[in-house]
Amino acid sequence: MPELPEVEAARKAVEDNCIGKKITKCIVADDSKVIDGVSHSDFEASVVGKTIVAARRKGKNMWLQLDSPPFPSFQFGMAGAIYIKGVAVTKYKRSAVNDEDEWPSKYSKFFIQLDDGLELSFTDKRRFARVRLLKDPTLVPPISELGPDALFEPMTLDVFTERLHKKKTEIKALLLDQSYISGIGNWVADEVLYQARIHPRQIASSLSAENCSTLHKSIKEVIQFAVEVDADCSRFPLEWLFHSRWGKKPGKISGKKIDFITAGGRTTAYVPELQKLSGTQVLKETGKPRGKTSKKTSVDDDNNDDIENPTKNEDENLGSLKSKKETGKAGAKGKKPSKRKKTEESDNDNDNDDGDAGADNDDSDQVEKKKPGKQTKGEKQPKKSVQGSQNSRSTRSKAK
Image (cartoon, rainbow, N blue to C red; front, side, top):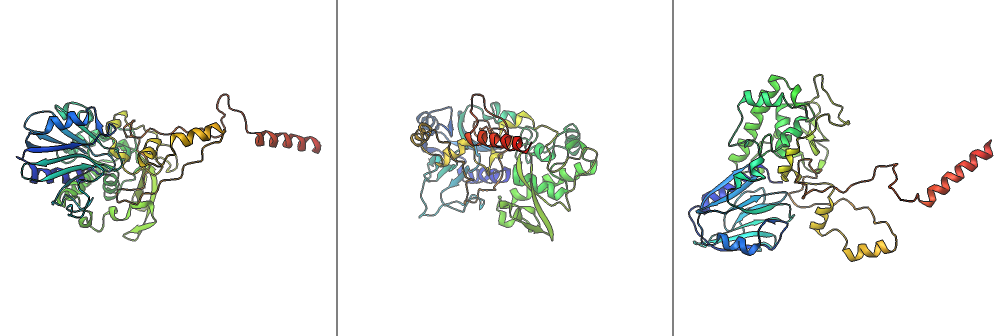
């Protein structure tokens, strides 16, 4: 679930503690799902002996600029995190790594030791992050396809308004579209829309000039404040929706009810009394959105941060699927596999959100569901339903 404020906190921690230091040791996990496009041994050999000269970020992506390419690049995914031993990075995850903590963590994907003894680890327990070794991260996807960074490259109000008025899609979906503006994820989108008093499913092009101005201001204020406190949510203003939006639990803010809907493909918290649909392009809250999210949202998998109904791939990552052997046995007996129960997440990363339409395809392959009432080609109708239909015809015949 790391969004711009959390990734920026990690970047600043690296900048404050690691710049100018040489990498003397590197351990990269032998995990081809997370370590993308390079073997762990080649990765390790490419960075040892090099000096970290800068820590860069765009959107929810970060990379270490070394004294010569290639550079390690991190796409944080759902649960990626930077830890520096002995240094508090951000309370979004946890404080400094203590002596009694496992170090490096069993979830570590990239570990380095610097010439002064300092140690850094990038961990990912959900395996939706991507760690790459790139000559120039800004010239290749996903970074090359990102829109302007919400913190470092803010749009002017005029440009922001003009671009909004060209989009006939829901505003929540647009804010999550990383090709439109990079760095905003689910909680930031909910927060800025609440602060701007805009319904998450309002069509972007229907927003008034006043709405656009208020939203532009909200994005700037929310992100800047969250960055200033290093994404320490305990220091977020008490009147923020953030504190009451998790877990889809009934609640109130300022005495007003918080409700949950799906917007932009995500579970969305909003306050109906304050965020009302308006204009001629109003959508029914239970209906389908008219606008389609740009296909370019596929450059970002981080909006998948808290999937409520796990995809097949995520289940495999979490070890919740049955083994192939067990599946084979069930198939041999002709039994249908039981329906998967919703995975319950107890960690702090879980937002209990639905999968995002803007997720990487390889990270969020959706399990195709059969439409009710339709029969797959070659599939026989169950005996019970056939018998039921025959009994029904027999009953009608007797009635006549």
